Image (tube, rainbow, N blue to C red; front, side, top):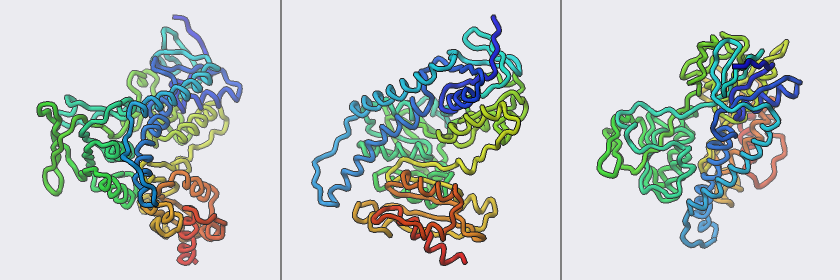
Length: 460
């Protein structure tokens, strides 16, 4: 096997890997990209952000049509054409994937599964590669929960949903996080009977409880049977149906379904890398263990970015971290990854959820003294005239200096409005400054100004 040498070897050609390669090349480094045999593009383009949102758009439009009657627009029966929806999704994925493939073509690209054979070497595609530095960006994968009988049931993941051309009559969803909630609403709105099992007292365990409570009410209004604090103890076949049995504080709860969507957590994809041969510390939950500069804590040649690090599985985080890892790999003075600054995230239900900055729970954990103000969406005229009165907005301000510490939005336009909230927090704005900023009328952004006015009155 012939040995070849490079300054930087990037393992994984998804969002973080591509960002790492770009950042290194901009600095004149010799870069080799290694990608597996799957289609190029990464999770976001192929199975995540873009295709999922293209499919979930059907639920959003169905919801808009349902509201039309309230504003005086009479509509006939709405039918979601799943085959047409999936054809559109595939066309969009092909477009984005072709664009990414053309970008990747600018780099030496080796197709094959990489495996470390030494602290400074990997083998892939029949080649032996030695590099000064490595950036591992292999992403994450869905993990099947250890529920008795689940492995033998007809299960699907969100990847499979993106190819479904026929809606199941009944579907059970295991997991009440962002993926489970979004697809629960989707299936309910296209006519499936949906049961959602969540093993905590509220949905969306990573958020403040009021967010989960709001989304639970929305899902229940859409007809979803939400089962909370559910200890799923058995999954079994009964003829053509699958039966799920769970214990809850209120007693046993059962559901029958044609198929089970597993929407639980994803785990860093490290299998097959043989990280032990490189002396790289890692585990199934945390992925590759890195320091604040995204460098492996046990092998200074290896950096990691994206979902394989086991933090927030978000594209904007992967983009930033991938580029930062590559820059730090050759920097005399590396820059620390500011996880708090990049933790903004969203949920594509209707209403949407967007969270930026700190939550109330995080403030309590960190001992940060904040004043909290909450307003229902109906507090502004735009929500009433547009039939967007579901949800609320919450703002947190530090009591010491009045700076905005966090904003949580549960609104129809939450994700777009989050841009203003992110800017306010990122620039260190005070609630006094927010209250004095011009806000167009009528808009949903007026909620931010009104929250700031309330907080100004409390923080002297």
